[in-house]
Structures are given as structure tokens and as C-alpha cells.
Amino acid sequence: MIFVDSNIPMCLVGAPQPVRVDAQVLVERCVAGGERMVTDAEVLREILHRYSSIGRKEAIGPALKVLLNLVDDVLPIDRNIVMRASEIVQGSAGLSARDAVHLAVMERHRITRIMSFDADFDRRPGITRSAE
Image (cartoon, rainbow, N blue to C red; front, side):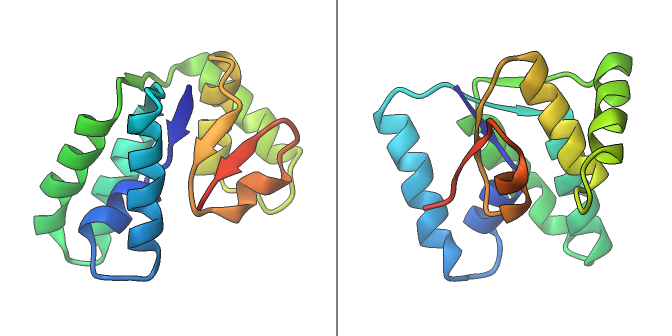
């Protein structure tokens, strides 16, 4: 099982950029290998926030559609996840609250792999980031 971060669908539907091909290859490799892909509710919120904040609201629907068509499940965020994320972010210099939420979700569901272009995940022991 692999966790899909928000930058993957955003690369697939956003403006042309060098990592778009990398994102396509990562997704195709997982699909071809029958890999179970999941995300969490925070990733959906990140997409809403990012495209709203940069005035590209028309991209919200396509990005959400791509993500929801890719993943097998959207994992919930509850009080225990937020409390664990709080512990993670307080103990990890330079780690964002959003990333801490993802890591808490991954920890709860015993997910050790993440598909992301965010190198901050490389600092987390036990997590393997797929980015190429």
C-alpha cells in the first residue's frame, strides 16, 4: 500500500512542469503493479486550499477527480490522528503540520511508503518516498 500526497494529482492536472512525467510514471507503475493507493482527507483539503489561494478554482474539480479515481480509499482524520500529528510536529524540526497529519495517518494504517515530491518525508525514519 502506498500513500498518495497532494502534489501528485496537482502535477498531473496543473501547468506543464518537469515533474509531470515523473508523476505519470509513478502512477502508471503502481497501477501496473496492482499497488493499493490511498490518501487522507487532508490531501483533499490541501487541493481545495492551494487552488483557491492561487485563484485557480477551476482546477479543483479536475485535481480531485484525478486523485479520487487513483486511490482505493480516502482515510479519515479524527481526534487521535490530530493528537498524534501534534506529537510528530513538535518532535520534528522543519516538518509541516500537514505532513505530520499524513504521517500520523500512515502510522495508524501501517503505511511505510508515500508517493510524493516533498523531500521532507525523507527525514522520517521508516518512511520510503517514491518520487521517480
